[in-house]
Length: 421
Image (tube, rainbow, N blue to C red; front, side, top):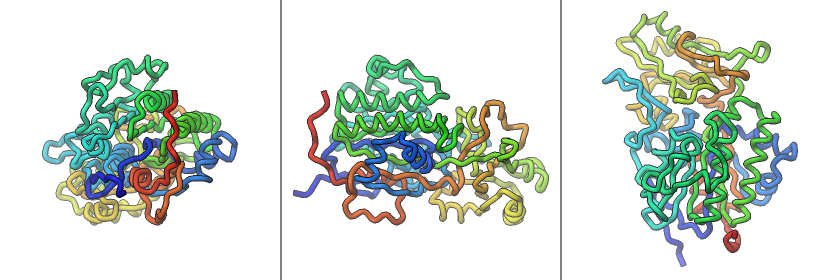
């Protein structure tokens, strides 16, 4: 008998015959898992990679949190869902606008579509900046749907989040936003809710605080990945189909000798060439949580007024540390971006270089370790791993936003065990 299907944004997904858990590990450069496994810290994942599906996929550019989480949630690139960064500049109003409001979304999510079709859906994020967009068009109330963040778990209500008394359920205090515990809370809550409710679809999204501060193989990083491995093992034991991916990778962006950040300050350069007020550099990595990266990433977009953009592009491309400079049209075609939320130029830094505005506009006092960051094409490779065999999957050209396609359309599921007590 043909399985029931749900269509979302032009893609068809089979109805799950086991609970689906998709995990977005923020900032998870594939080497984190490789190093942790090689050093014996992730026994469950080591086995899952051997017996299930182990691939590397491309995330979307810019390699930032919001565009990629929304791509995973919708199954589509930013040209479809509209989120091209953590924020953008509105030339008509002259305002820099955070893109964390659901009003900026241009299509629905897999979560809302499956809930409408009768599925029980649970979404848990580390930071609250994603929660409202991931919960777009979901319904909340007792036994309906759940969407909350670790950051504000103590404020969750039935009406707004579909759950209350989260701290009592999880047995953990509210975590600090700059901590490994913010991510651990996501998994602890996910395990408890899988045990209690056994939802059809669960999405768990972490924060990259650890990856910004610690390289693959470092003790703190290994401990963090060991923690996640333990929770994934619990979900696996409950019969869940688990897909692991990431919103972006992470690279060192500092001078190895001095430890100082490597930065090209674009606004300062452009002001010197074109004059002040003629250009506007926007860094879409910027969000309310800049302590661990100082708003420095490897992607920027530039708006221009009465300036020869081709000349500016040529001059920027000649600067050491700049890898790519594209016109709006070229960038949108190459990276599947929405043209109305991208400037006249898109600039991408080299692997070890970040892009800033001007030195005085970046507060780097919160960088207690040498800078690690993301945003460019060198952070595009991410894991795409499933604890099931993927029957008939073609591994070429996989994207991180194929995660739900992998889980729902390709997973060869085991006989479903009884729910855990």
